[in-house]
Structures are given as structure tokens and as C-alpha cells.
Image (cartoon, rainbow, N blue to C red; front, side):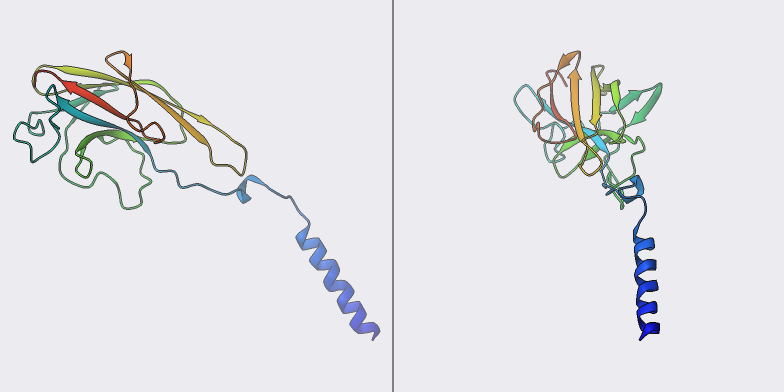
Length: 179
């Protein structure tokens, strides 16, 4: 009987020692798979026609669109999948077609990085340019709460109203009067 009590006592002592330790260390906090942010742009003419719709005869998809950012020029990409298989690649890809929404995307940006007024110059291939400025701010809400991401966009220096403000990635509209 003494031996059984001794074994139980040692087992409880070991169990108590193993369970005592640092609680809530950062490595134990939840991780969030945050998809990279991007700027989504609806482009229309003065009549409201979607200029990114491949089915619209007057679309701009083959007009030689380029994007300038940080001293680099990116050619427009209308083919290939813009979202990677794992969805977490935040490397900058340039300007691409979102064929599902029939919009353009500028991206990608690391969602956990503050960005202060990054400037992107879109050359529409017809001599006209649009300057898009983008900022995002990350707010840490505590160790067990998903961070808050707030974004702002400016089109040619004017703060743009977001088409869907609740989205993390801003969706803005650009109207091209002369295409």
C-alpha cells in the first residue's frame, strides 16, 4: 500500500512540475493566416462601361497598360492566376486582371506591415496616367485578438471613397474620360 501511495505521490509531483511553466508565451498565441492586401480598381468610361471586361469591345486590356512603382515598371498581366496556391505570397506582382470581378489589382502587400503613402503610377497605354497612393496601418489589439488593418487610397491626390469600406483590401473606382 505504501508503495502504491508513493507511486501516486511521485506521479502527481511530476504532473504538477510539467504543467507549471510560462503561460501565454508568444509562441502559444494564435496565429492568423492573413492574406496579403492589394488595391482593387474598377475602371469605367464616362458612359459607365467597364473597361476591364474582356467582353466589352472598347476594353483597355490590350492597350499596353503599365505600372510604375519604386523605380520599377511592371507590364499588365491578364493571364495566369493572381492568387497563389497557398494564398500567402505577399511579394509585389505589379498590375493584374481580376477576371472574376472584371477589375484591376495592384499588389500584393504584406498585411502585417505599415505602409505610408506608397505611390503607383498607372499608364493606361494612351498617354494618360493615374497616380494611386496607398497607405495601410496595422493596430495590435492584444495577444489573442486579430489585428485591425485600416487602409486609405488617393486617386490623383484626392482621397478616394472606398466601394466596400469593410474590406481589408481597398476597392476604388477610376473613370477614364478619354481612353
